[in-house]
Image (cartoon, rainbow, N blue to C red; front, side, top):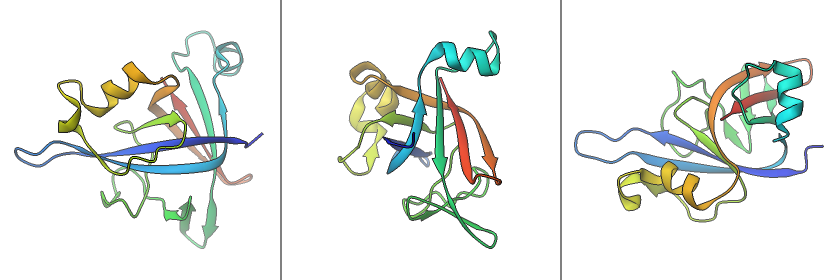
Length: 143
């Protein structure tokens, strides 16, 4: 357990006439469950999610850190590469991204997320997030 590596891609919306930007964060030591039967057993047959991702975090008072970056809720995220969030505009991929920051405009009409879906396995859009404190971790569901 907690032996997988994923890359979270946080989407910074583009301004007027600018394409969105994706900030990657590679996270080692996570648990990615892509067993559809296990997910349906836990969440019910109506579950449309295809992945369950567990990411441990560190807490210092009110501050939460993930992969060395401060975590912020989606509404309070500062939209920089120096922090991380888990929101429904974001996605994760089972793998280690080494290509740096990505601009949607470099990937045509479907953008970077569409490109990743077409060219890679195990790409999941974030659909919901839960924060647990007893055993400090995030549980992120993906489609």
